[in-house]
Image 1 (cartoon, one colour):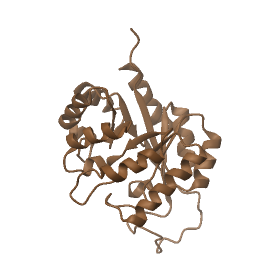
Image 2: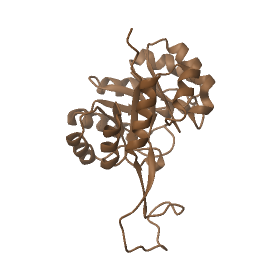
Image 3: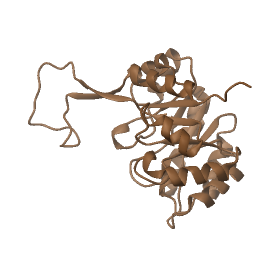
Image 4: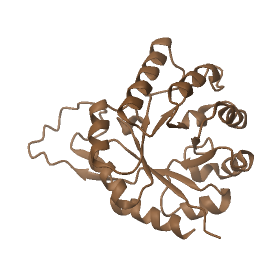
Length: 250
């Protein structure tokens, strides 16, 4: 009997990272803007360039801003518009999630987004990890026809959420694909798999690179003051390849 394939998704916010992910053996990428703040909706032209360069599927993050997942009507309109746009551009999947103020999944608006995304896979992202009851949300996601739930087991790191991840995987019973994410690497994938049985993993595999800028104005910050303007976070092909090898050996 053939082994069940383990899936590897890499989240990226640069063309170079997307190319490294594919070379390293990723099954797909999650295309984002601004991973430093958790990921937001990427620019359409960014998507077009990546799609022209990659052969593997592209799932697109649809998130209008950083922060929580309780959205205004205007923000919801932005989500709908983004899904329509990326569907027309040829995206293979959408990554999105909405919560109500009480921390429950916003089933009504999620149903609208799922309807708009027909023909694409739909991932409920880590809004799931901020919901009030993940076991209730899993059942709701199944009824909505969502394909994938990205989760750390409601902890900061997937390794800290092993018990919840195992319980969710047991509850899912193959009805929906659970994808473990948050500080996932080739080093901890074997233990995550052993303890939870989850067969899909999400990581960034980022390394810190020095900017090619020679002239540097070090007393001016364009964003987060604690971050250097002259450092670049980028997916490392070797880190992806190491994770691929580990998954294939499980």
